Image (cartoon, rainbow, N blue to C red; front, top):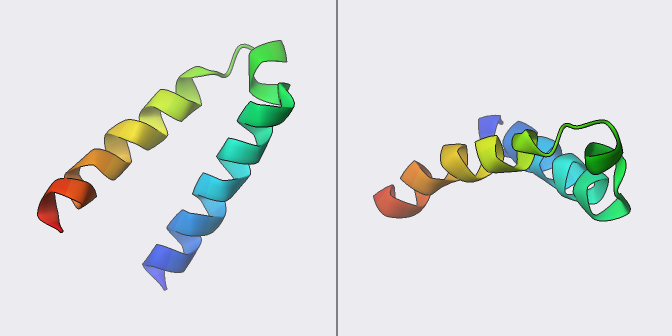
Length: 45
């Protein structure tokens, strides 16, 4: 269940990033937070 919520949030952030919404509202740092949160999971797997 937690993975499903994470995927929905991650896909939403990526869509907002590629549409330019995050850049227009100075929220581009959210993409970096997503990368930092994903990095430990990649190392664990």
